[in-house]
Image (cartoon, rainbow, N blue to C red):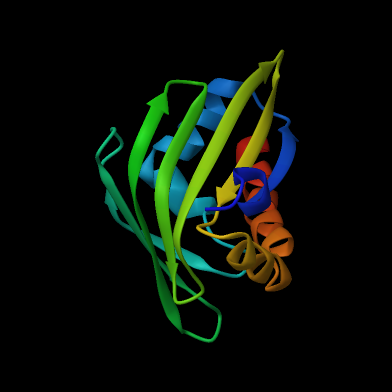
Length: 148
C-alpha cells in the first residue's frame, strides 16, 4: 500500500462560526440534511447513529432527479476535535476514509477535511473527477448554514 500522503486529498477552511455550532452541524441529522452534498442537491438522512461503530446513510438527489447513496461507519469520534469514518459515495467513490478535524479559533472554527483513498492511483482519479470543486461546494453550503 502506498504512503498515506499519496492517497489523501484535503481541503481546509475557516468557518465564521464557533466550534460548537460547526460540530452541531456535522453531528445532528436535521442539520446534515440542510448542507450535505454539493450545491443543487437535496439530502435525506436515512440513518445516522453518531457513535463509534455506528452507521450513517444519506440519499442525495441531483437536480435531474438521479439519486445516489452515501454511507459509512464511524471509526473514531472525539467531541469538538475530529470525526473519522469509512465512506462510500456510490457510484462515484467507494472504500475511502473521511476525516474531519475541528479547531477552535475564538469565534471561528478552523476545519480540515481529508479523504484517504485505497491507492495513490485511485486518489489521482478522484482528484481529476473534481474532488476539490465537489467538496468545496459542500463546504460552501456548510459555511452558509453555520453563518446564518
